Length: 254
Image (cartoon, rainbow, N blue to C red; front, side):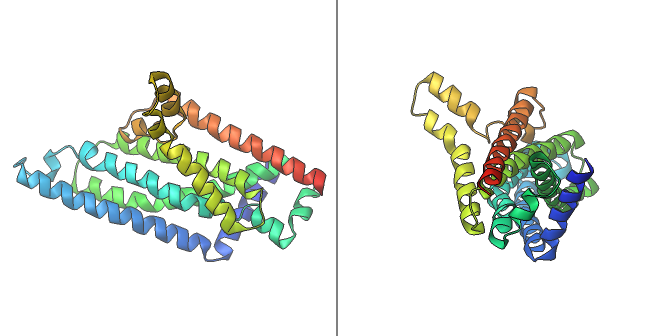
């Protein structure tokens, strides 16, 4: 466990050693803030027009928080490939991958260390957005449970993206290529349910289950379903397992 934490700490520090962490956190916060402002303005305007006695009497969870989390998941789709693109690609480009693979740590310790390092950066991104949500609790009266569940869904969704981002990064030395392929792969999983609409009921059901966003919808509503939790945990496990096989093949080639 000590080795994993040491690698995770090294990964997190390496993000902040370059502008990448500051740019990604700032970008994520700015985009989240734009959607927050737009939905807040729309929510207040609609509440006043309906004569509901002000925004505090409207359903802020359904009319604002849920769509904000939905849009946040789209931001995650664009941002996280830029987090994982350098995990192994930079090691290969700089030639430090050989030193890492010959060090007295196992492949799984390396993988989990890089995974938790990327998760730590992602948590910092989410932490910044809590300031926006705090505004709702200061000036309104939303339910706290859907907010917590929504953030749990974003965490599981991001962990799934990161696990496969590590896999793609282990295939190439080029960070840009790693980011583009990761984004394309995740985008396919994002829209795969749309293709099921052209098939029969069975095809539609299978494609809907494979879609990574279909499982997030309940989280955005404040609902925790073990089926969705297991899907994301299985997705993470599969991504890390395939990454271990890729790293193991790199070790043998080296």
